[in-house]
Amino acid sequence: MTQDLPPIRRRTFLGGAAATAAAILPSAAVRAQPGDPVARTSNGPVRGMRSDGINRFLGIRYGADTGRARFRPPVRPEPWQDAIGATEYGPASPQRSSQPETAEDCLFLNVWTPGLADCGNRPVMVYFHGGAYSNGSGSHPLYDGTRLCQRGDVVVVTVNHRLNAFGYLYLRRLAGEAFAASGNCGQLDLVLALEWVRENARQFGGDPDRVMVFGQSGGGGKIASLMATPAAEGLFHSAATMSGQQVTASGPANATERARAFLAALGLDDDSAHRAADLPAGALVDALETADPVLPYGSVYFGPVKDDLVMPRHPFYPTAAPQSLHIPMIIGNTHDETHAFLRGPQYENIGWDDLPALLIPNMRVDIRPETVVARYRELYPQRSPEEIFYAATTAARSWRAAVIEAEERAKAGAPAFVYQLDWGNPHAPHTFDIPLAFDNTAVPDSLTGNSQTARNMAALLSEALIALARTGDPNHAALPQWQPYTMEHRETLVLDWPPRMENDPRGAERELFASVPYVQPGT
Image 1 (cartoon, rainbow, N blue to C red):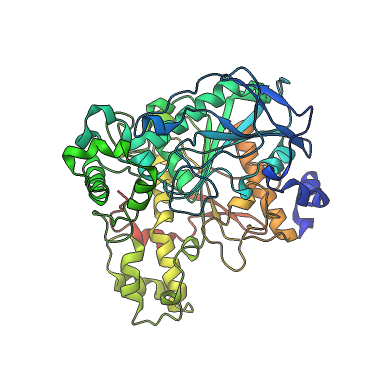
Image 2: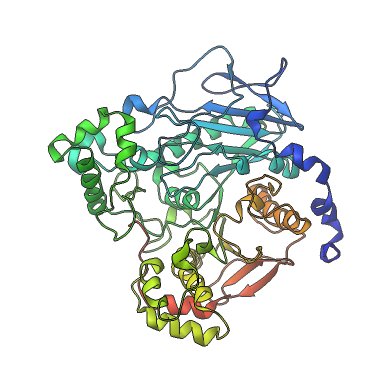
């Protein structure tokens, strides 16, 4: 249906298909050559490589080895004089997932840029990866910035930082003021990375006054948390969150109970809590399997803490954080979030009698499940129990938090641009918008596939993010006029083919779950 697109943008959607496969190859596969680009950063020079018309610098150190100061704020690295190779990704934070390389020495970032020190004043798009504060890295092929650079003449940055206990173990009440910031060290890593971006943007052809942060899932939560973190004020100028919200941070009492449970798994108590700073990293990773002492499900949760030091307030409770109300923001979710992670035989062939008990642990809010089932059957009489299960769990979890964030921004006179990704094959689950945002539908791990429609959808979303980074407004010619969210109309861009604006989509579902208090998962 490309005839439906405004003629001015047809080449955006249909051009460059032959170049796609080369552009999305994992960056580490491209070898450095003599004469490859050198950038002089505030810490020292780095040598990258150039491919497909884009300079790429992988594994640039922005912070010192955190293993030397575990559970403490990050510090800048010792400066260097000779050019260091930046052709391979740096290690990720220690974690339980199958990352290829992990280490406590993990404060590295990656940069893709069309130009170097060329007064290009390009917008800088800084991506924070997902993984629920516990897993992941900025090195996944889906996050390769080549296509965004080619499409929008922008600079793209991805970041590694401390995760799980290494970044969010709150020890202040157990081990003293030497560890006062321990519950938010992972966030302070991101602040240090953004300070690096501010200092070095011009060396990479970027504009330090046009820095956009964007992130999916946990990455979106990290952004929402930074919007309430005074140390991050002024370091970014627009924001986009994709299926990732943080209405409230963890409270210090719950964070302390989690620390106690984690320390007990290490054989430590309150009096010996400080010894966790000296244990082998592998022991800490093994202890991450400890059951959470606060929640009735899952392993111990680590995430930002309202510690009255690094984070003096919750991000979106009781209101949106005033320090970030001037920042234009996109808040997005996918229509079928829980199809990504509620999987297995227990979720197949669900019967009506089984549905209420299955909903209770998966909605994450305290509401009578029979009431939910009855209301959904009224709204959607043709749907099966399995379809209602996924619809209700999606609406009650991250989408509910997205609505709260949009509402609080609207009430404060700083509304967000809200989207709902409906396009899918056949569903639009959690993570489905990542390859669209990066224009990387041809990457083998992309859930979207690389059909013509997938490429068109990628153009819709990636162009919107580029526009937000460049001007503070995500509108572009291939979209309907994207109106900001208001309490009166609840304007939402429905990303489908073709895209459309709707007022209050799934409004009846929103009203159902608004009847009970929302509790941020993990807090």
